[in-house]
Length: 114
Length: 116
Image 1 (cartoon, rainbow over the protein chains, first blue to last red):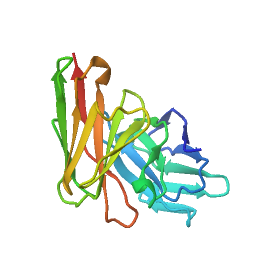
Image 2: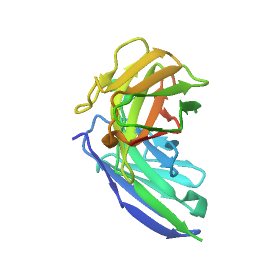
Image 3: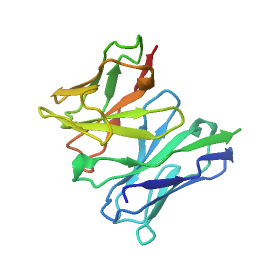
Image 4: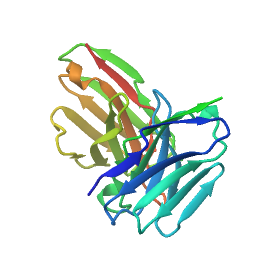
């Protein structure tokens, strides 16, 4: 019940295309859903996050769509660029329980071809 | 977001020795710090959570006597890998949180540990 399932494991997209990564969760107590971007040999960087009181959040080319009833959320990267090539992790937590402990998805390795 | 540093960025040690990794929150008072390990092509695995001035809470399966965590202040936490073995070779990453509206976690750059 604590798991967050992420798909696909890897994704190849042409430059300018849309990259879509999906995550699903079981624990309805989760109330914070961040996405992290990680480049090889670096720590993860917070990209964008959403709370369940909204269905969509957009920041630049990055959009999170959230479906509370389906317990699913996804990251859309519009106009994907080669510089977006990285591993993306979704995560979930109960903000004020367990110190905000994050449960991570398995990760998606994105490759954007020029 | 918070600026987090880790030292060293990479370390190579002999089997049986101990290694200390520092995590510093440079511009942020971190009431909570987390330690993760990450194997190649895998996700982050939480090892322990620590609050300033109190003992760390370890995840199931993580040996607390092997991975010693000290959260001495709001800006510094250390992870000591005692009697390291080759299977402890991994990428160790810390994160900090505290005081922001959504209790976000901000990650350090990671430390690559190789045990020969």
